[in-house]
Length: 583
Image (cartoon, rainbow, N blue to C red):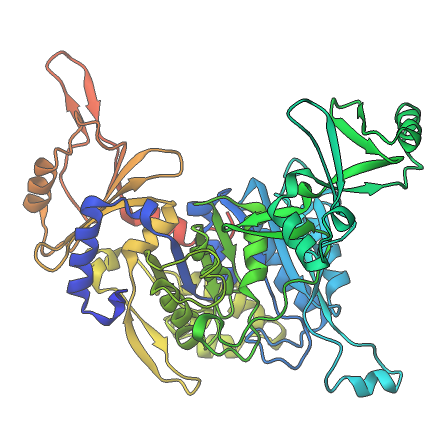
């Protein structure tokens, strides 16, 4: 496992260029890990991932007031709901039609959450309220039970919503004990005669031997269900006959299925309750809305410590397998320690994880790196996971960082002369909007795009460090580009070329350059070498920064015209960057 952040930028640039010569970067990148406020990150992802996510799982702050979340886990109900509302509405735009969202919550906000989510997804798309048993009936809370104050809190809820009524999940089984009523071996011999054997009596098997025999030979093992009060008139007559004939009777139901009847009962096959998973057999029952087989996450899962509580990998495995297939996209925008992303990686799904907590580097990122290195905790062994993959890690500037980099014109005297009731409106509605325009990013910054920096806070005392900002990758996300190849020659030749596909399917080339290193002549040489001209059809759209004299229209000898869709980066970047959020 290689952490490219530990190497100089020049090495990172060479490695990325080398990898993309043989691999499609978009197809071969398994995960995107984002250190950011989730509202900001979800906005950035809109163009690139709209209607592509198959499953969202979130475990937001429960509004308890005592578990130390970065989101101040003691909001009043309305403030808490606002946070969940605006983020979920953004996330919904990323969901494909046949997708689902799962939100885990405690009873504190469960009722409010469901009302909110139903307003977003519609009541018909509320699929289930799942109860997950998360603890046992023991511990210090027993004293509260004995006082008659509170019952044991042993469950949390997962609210399950689909993005359309047509969505269908995959059913699953939960482990079940063997029921020794499945003791009848019923089959036809070579001559077509029905044979019946009471394994318990006729083969004198112990309970343990019977269980093993049934698990190894489930095809012909049945129990006899004699409570058939709701049976139709047609089958009732055959049931009555089997009660006295001592023979196996059969009945074809309205769906064309053959039912086996014996001793006045319907023979229920054991085969439907035998589950084969990763080559192992076990007895199971179809899953319900009570998940009591998950348990708690082991402290060793992911090989990281996390005081805010990890969710068990087994839980996320069930959710992801219910709703996705390999290479489908999974999103968690309250990522925490990284359970969702790690499980998605182990199940060969693509994923996006967003977390803003201070523990990002020491917990979330470390867990992802250990997973890529082949960590064998959690579900790794049951899925035969060995590690490997490419993960992209992003850090977005915070709202506070943006404010710290604004340069406002000196208007203290003017503002001070305004009525107090007007000052706040002027500051928020005019000064920050109009007077600060161009202070964060303007067209002059695009002449040296690889040198653009912001002052990023390093502590709460006001210290900051000048940090390089990646305009190249920012523009890729603003466009929604599926990046296939990157040629990074910024060190030697002063340019970076990005090839990919736009959301509408158009083939796109983006050429970023330092205008002092790559002037008019160098741009012409580069375009000629790459056969980029109005007569070429290898790209539908070409973006280029800075002034140039490249022709976008050719007059051909036969009188026809050829056009190259050559666009300036600057106006498009600024338009997309400062567009209304969520557009």
